[in-house]
Length: 568
Image (cartoon, rainbow, N blue to C red; front, side):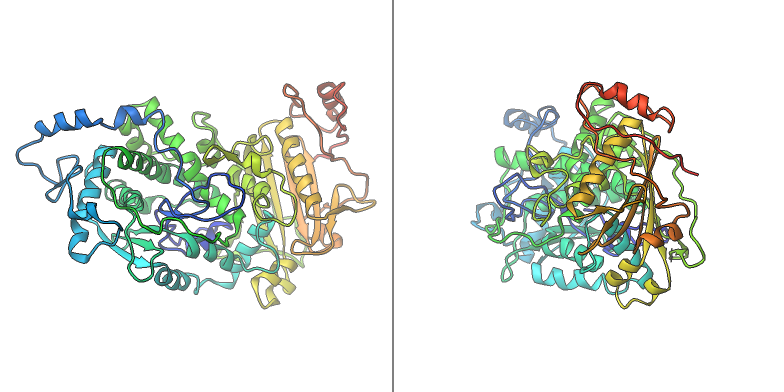
């Protein structure tokens, strides 16, 4: 995976990841009886997994068969060059034999490393139809050495950014009051990264599970070499999103490109090429990671390859992917639903707090972020693997073949969202970010493409609150309290046509201090509505709400939602 570099713009969920200057790619698990871990990709690993099918519909047209490859050898130039000849780097062709091919392990001595790297570069060129401009340095280190280096990257994060991250992840029910978001994120990256590319040094580091004799995983190397190629050709430092959703969306192109090449690389290794694979490829112990954070950052690896294939099919193969670097996707919805050409709504949360509350300032800006469709899916799926409470998106619905499924009715009508953190004197005086988050609050404004889409999200969010022990507050409209646990506090939901605003504060009385008018006196208007396959609810106002839903759900036996209140 390419790095998420530190930036001055504020992103709630990206702020901790931004401190990880160099990170590894991610791989997805297959569905298994229990989550055990195995290394097969350039990154955070899970169950004895591959990165997905080694071949798909695009592979056959872009990978040469043995007979074709043999015939092309006769057409190779007499004087090939690294800069101009695809599949040839520093004297090595992509299909050359090396002495290390006959080894029973993947331990590569220093004097043998360069030929392996050059051949792997040539193989990436052959698949990607693009040449490297420069050499790429590669180092192989142990997991212990990587953990030490990775931990140092979380040392110098400001208290404002730590609070920002804790509140942001708490809003998605991923990190509770007993955990620092930095620790949870460090665990995801420190425990399972298999390799990374650092553009500051133009170096690739491969992380090995063998502490005594680190082994080189050639598939991981191939993935990271794509990032080096991207950096040389497209300058990866240009791709820094201002929100978590935008950052993840651009990763859909960048990681989708690398993962797409990786899959073809792995498939060709299984058929034609001799490739180095670690002898300790599978771990015996499961990963101890935060699954919600994992799901939120894995989406580019899951949907990115299909997004890249879509680009190739619509344009001139890899040239269309090259062109996309001038106009990368800006929302995860665009990657989850390629070809939908969704433009995000302009969502902005006005400050309606009283004098005791204020919007958190981090890095000189108001602490805001956009979770996006992928972040919301991760929120609803976070409890699906090891959670102590039921999950809104169940494990069986989370997996699709060997990949995750990020297309769900709860979230696929996303149009935009913005989450703003609010703080007060108690939060500022707290000794750690997890404690501070309990005293803080937030306003999360979500917007949807239709009334039906809004209700689908309401369905999921109400179920999420119920799963975490929330109870409705008597006499307060659409207000809920979680009494105990890591997400205790008061929550108010305000539905208005195609928006749902969520306000969280430490107590019911503080809700209206964070957001004026929150938690008014009255009866609940929101309930879980059951939809049939063809039922729709148009964007309706408070007067038309009862009739619109009654018509849509007539005869279904579903509970009917009535009396929406327009936002002031």
